[in-house]
Length: 63
Image 1 (cartoon, rainbow, N blue to C red):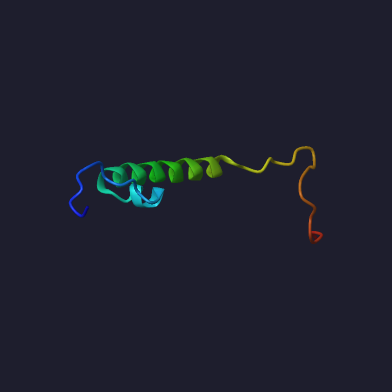
Image 2: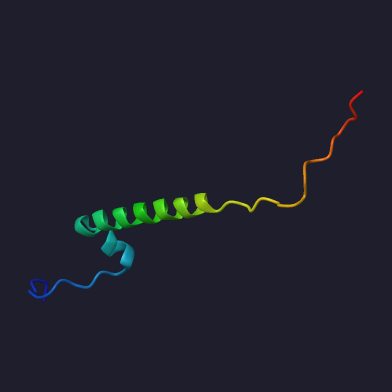
């Protein structure tokens, strides 16, 4: 039984599967692209400018 020949046992977890060399390169690239997309999306979120409020009030009167 110690010398069984057959298919390799299934990986125990997705993390262990993703850490093997061919998959780790793809997982790294996917994570890198996701981080870039998320940072690009957050960078495009801008607060809307207030319209129709006029200029800001003057803090001290001019003499």
